Amino acid sequence: MKKNDKRDRSKKKLRQKQMTASSERSADQKKENQTARKKKRQNPSEKQRQARKPTAKKPLKKQAQQKQLKAKRKPNGKKKSGSSGRLKKRKLKLFMVEISLTLAVFLGLFFLVSFFAFKIVQTQGYSMTPTLNDRDQLFVNKLGKIEHFDLVCIKEPGTNELLVRRVIGLPGDRLEYKADQLYINETEKVERYLSAGMAQNGDVQFTEDFTLFELTKEKQVPEKSYFVLGDNRPYATDSRHFGFVSEKEIVGVVKFRIFPFHTMTVF
Image 1 (tube, one colour):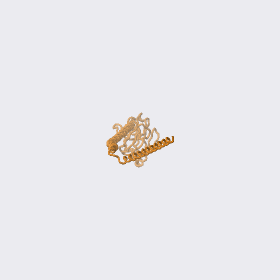
Image 2: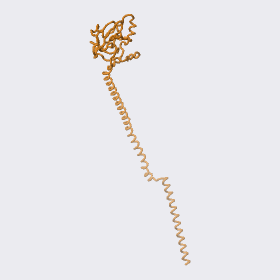
Image 3: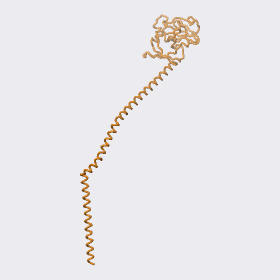
Image 4: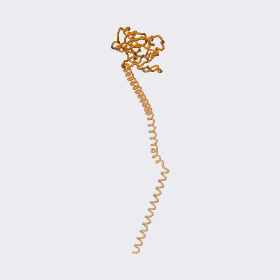
């Protein structure tokens, strides 16, 4: 029995030795394999290099593709710049069209309103000095109500020439001048606008004596008619020469002088 036990023990020891030796061998082989792999990684073979070549080419292809895309984008960029320029031109054209339309509408409204509401008139001659001078620009209100001593723009009977004169007689008035004094309906009226002209005329009578009946064979101003005189009485052509002015021949009431600017005046 003792011999058998010894044999068994010896067999176990051999097995253990064999197992340790095999484990040591496997560990050594693993180490050798790892070192070999490391060497292969550090020094790849030709096959591995050839296998790796296409992987190196891949980024080159990507770079080439990117270059092609950039080259394609360049003309597209030019097209974009060209399209933006066209858009700017279109916007300018639309802006100019809008401005021209607004100007056309404004001018159309201006002329339409001026046709019915007002008129710009230029004086001719010296019949209204010193109140007005030759070539003064006047604003005439076509819708204004006519009252005594208003300045009005009229069409001269017979010639239709535009004149500016002062209203002395309204429809139904009786008029008379005596010694440079105006009487309307037997009432004395002061004409302050004549003071400068009368002062320049000196002692000579500024307005000749007359009655409405002596000039027109009418005792009073007819309906829808007016009697007008120029402020420069010795030289003016007015109702003393061409008679009454009908309502149709009156363009409007002069409201103010526009030009010259330094003499701008409201009447």
